[in-house]
Length: 300
Image (cartoon, rainbow, N blue to C red):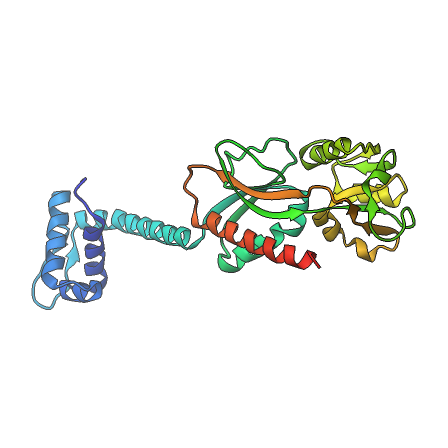
C-alpha cells in the first residue's frame, strides 16, 4: 500500500466521475494511455482490480475493492487539497502570528498594524500578549514590541524615538517649556520603576533632579487621572500623551522639557536564527510604515 500515490487516486476518482478513461483523461489534461497507466499502478499497489471494464460504449464500474479504495481515496484527496490550500494561504501571508506588546504601542501603533494585516489577509490569526517587563521573553513569540535595547539571541528593528513630555495641571507651570531642574522635589505621578521608567529616573538622578514620587501606577489613564486630581505632574512619553488626546482637556497642559531628556526608544524584536513566516515579515513591514508615518505626524 505504500506505493499508492495521490495521482493514482485522482485518476481513479476522475474515471468514476466521468464514466470513462477518455473523458477522465480530458478532464485531467492527460492522454488516455497515461490514465490507464495510473490505474494499472493503483491496481498493482492494492493487489486487485479497481474497475470492471465492460468494453464498448458502456461506462466502467468500480469493483467492490475499487469502492473501498475510492471511499478512502477521496478522503485523502480532500485532505491533500486542504493542505495545499493552507500552504498557499501561509505563503500568501495567512496563518498565525503571536505578538508581544505594551500599553502605548497597543493603543497607537498596533491597531494600525492589525488593520493592515486584516485588510490583506482577513482570515489570519493574530494573538496579542501585553506585559510590562524589564527583560522581554521573545522565545515564545513571533514578534515583540519593547521600549529598550535587548542583547543576546534577539534581532531588532528600531521603530522610533519617543520623546518625553511633562503633563501638569493647568497653571502649575507657565506656558512653554519647563526646565528639568524645576522638577526637583516637585510632586510627581509615575509608573512603576521598571523598563523606560527606571531609565528615566536614573537620568533625572544623574542631573541632580529628584522628584517627590507621590503615586505609582501601571495604568496610563490612572496616571493622568491622578494628575487631573492634583496629586502631581507626570513625565510621559509622547505616544501616551498622543493617545490620551490631552489637548482636548482644558484642565491639563503639556510642556516640553529643557534640556530635553533622552527619548524612549521603541523597538520591534524577534528571535535570532528563526525562520519567520510571511505574516510575521509583513507585520514588521507594516509596523515600520506606521511608525514612520506617526513620527512624521507627531513631529509637527
